[in-house]
Amino acid sequence: MKPAHGFTALPLDEVYTLIEPGPVVLLATRGRAGDNVMAMSWHMMVEFTPPRIACVVSGGDFSFTALRANRACVIGIPPLAMAAQVVKIGNCSGRNVDKFATFDIPAYPAPQVKAPLIGGCFANLECRVIDTRLVNRFNLFVLEVVAAWQDPVITDRRTIHHKGYGHFAVDGTDITLPSRMP
Image (cartoon, rainbow, N blue to C red; front, side, top):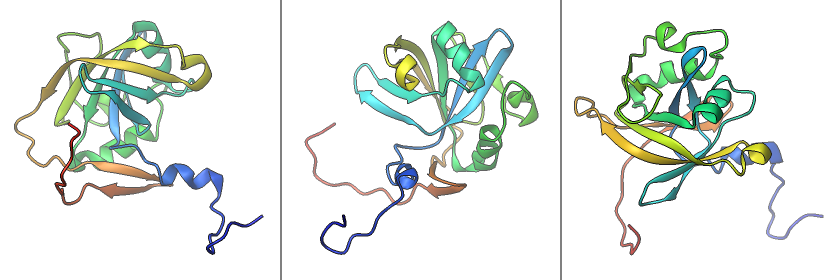
């Protein structure tokens, strides 16, 4: 059955390319094998104060076990200048590669959580896992940001947004419209 107005079907496996939630970020964890970093696009803010973030980390990802066990991570917000590194990080597994060393990403001790801050990112968010009720069913973790850091040296804060199949958008011009929301 076709809808009215001349709409045409969109393959369901392409829907995610339209509802991209935000910038590609880096998720750092610490596990038995050491520190790891992965690229992550499936995340969203779920509360303003305290800041809470929901994210999907596949059970097949090397970071999943460390995140579930240690209940802590760091989310780094990489600038456009790190785009090539971010894609390389996302195209391999920490099971086989020390991504921090291989891709020349500095790791720094985080004051609040047992996961490293990520060098090169313009912001780092130290997070604790506060809810795992949807992990078994959807691989969805709810995190609370317990500390946030920014690198004042990085002034270009444009980010990349994954559109699927190797395509990315770059932040563009900001606009301001009247709003009652924060």
